[in-house]
Length: 271
Image 1 (cartoon, helix red, strand yellow):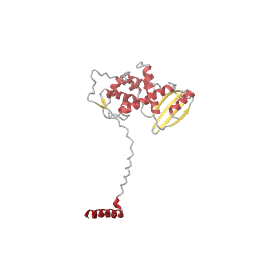
Image 2: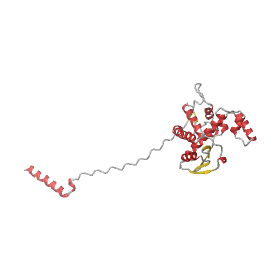
Image 3: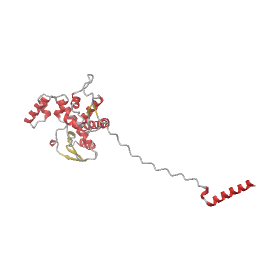
Image 4: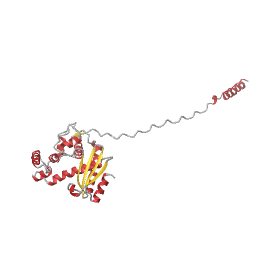
């Protein structure tokens, strides 16, 4: 059963437990509680909440440092809860980032081509707190998969390396959002999209979308994405040679007959 269908089945049964998918070196886990998504993790790097809020213009580095220091005193508290309790960000800011991370991780799990999927049931009390509905997460993850395919066709995949153009500094009529500045400052012709996303605290999809907008603004350039290799066409077999017309003189008897007729005609002319 495919992963999306498995999650829908778990939602329909109101199940609680962990759904693990392994495809080569990639491992993803989705926790459900009473049929709702609780969390989703992927073995690939996940964007950091603090840096995501900083580069999104929601939090200053100074305040992030204060929150991290407070979290060290109360390690049982999550960073998002610390930030909210300190009044540095709103609960909506934290939930928005958490939603992006959740949907991006589920999209990465759905992108697996040949996963081995196992489900381990647990009691509801043993699972993390229930979150959004499975249908909502799958819909958002599917949209991300479609968007990712568009980006790959436009600027390439996670290994794409962007470079600055001569018009790096925006003109007065170009206004950049904090997220765009955060990505633009990390474009150096060496870092990949995945590396920029990791350092800026964005998901790879978010960073790629921002780079795409910077390319459209003429501030960044990327190598032209490789085009699919056209299928090798079979070399047409050479046409069969047209049979040669039979040579009348290939037959010795026909040659003698022709010479005889020519000789008789010559004698008639002499007379």
